Image 1 (tube, helix red, strand yellow):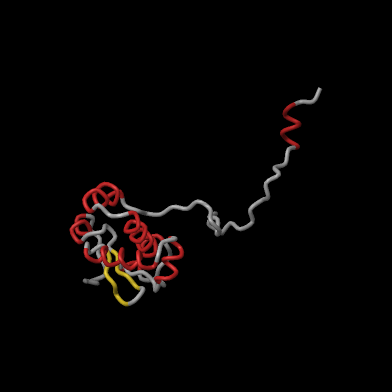
Image 2 (tube, rainbow, N blue to C red):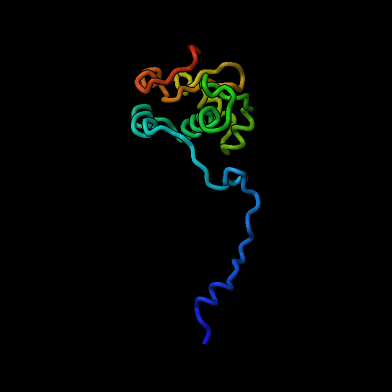
Length: 142
């Protein structure tokens, strides 16, 4: 009779070994990752401002570009240049909806256009929340 331990010891997974892991252990393709979205967004911003699905998508896209990805201008709260067409494609929404969401988010002062495709985004979404969490922007004031 065959011992179960010897069977398990000889077993090899049929799944391919993933060689696309970075040095940090994160998958370069579309593996799981972590984004640093403050709880204040879920507790206050979504509740108080009644953002649409597309507004939230665009805000989170910009927020992740500013605060969650490697970014030389992170300490200033500024994203790198991005194409509106690329944003539309990545979010799978019409370009007109992206433009509408950008205007609405600027009205709420969640983002500010620095120049076409480059945005300032507050870490905690409003000046008052930034102050209460002691977030500064190296004297970059909008």
